Image 1 (tube, one colour):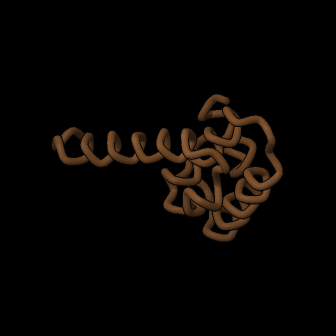
Image 2 (cartoon, rainbow, N blue to C red; image 1 turned 90 degrees about the horizontal axis):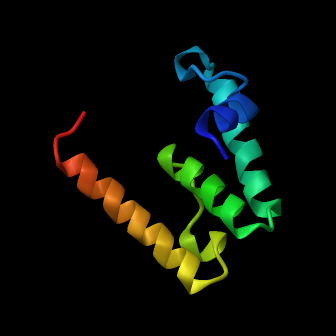
Length: 89
């Protein structure tokens, strides 16, 4: 899954500055539904990461059946938090 493809699929554009609040909310809801229906572990993980970056991801115990997937998500969140603390823009 490519970020541009996800943006296009859920928001009908790759430029988030052009997305109206209602369209954004509908895109997030559509993505959450797709996450719930997706059976492929890799695609589920990518959808969860996408939602997490928008502050809309479900809790790990809801999103992932396996502890391995939950741990991978925790590692991602830790890496993201560490990169934000570096002062890198």
